[in-house]
Image 1: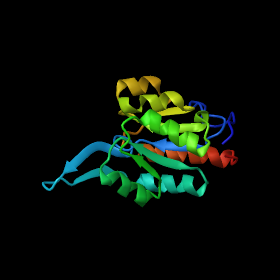
Image 2: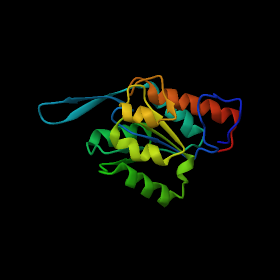
Image 3: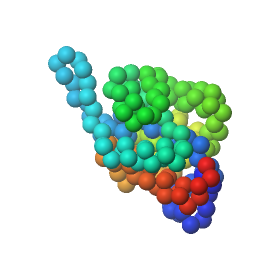
Image 4: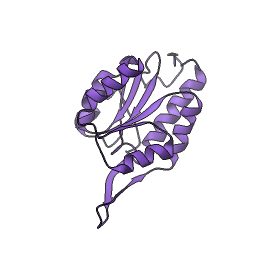
Length: 173
């Protein structure tokens, strides 16, 4: 996506968006986990996020989920949303760098949405670091865009809608 002056002036859009990266816990979820007596876990996500992701997919914008969480619930949500998932990584910054190198993506053309200190390296390397409204103070301090919605409460949809509107105004990605 190329920058234009008539788009949401409060968002410092990169000149081009080549990839949107979503953290999972605290971004796609409300950061809670339901643990069953057999050890299985469940999380709470917002169904509206899925439509936003569909809009960006239909517009041809690549997206991934990047998570330190190894639980199968992350992969299950990724399958439901038809998003590639990189999970179980101890160092998200290194994992993102490797992913970008493998796919020939310039970090300046990446939007990354995070909420906690393990997202800081990723947020520091991308063109548009984004935080959910209830992110930890360290993440809020480095974000160039702070969403009005909390993680798991439509934050992903808010981001997707804004990117989709911007793509409609300037369709070249």
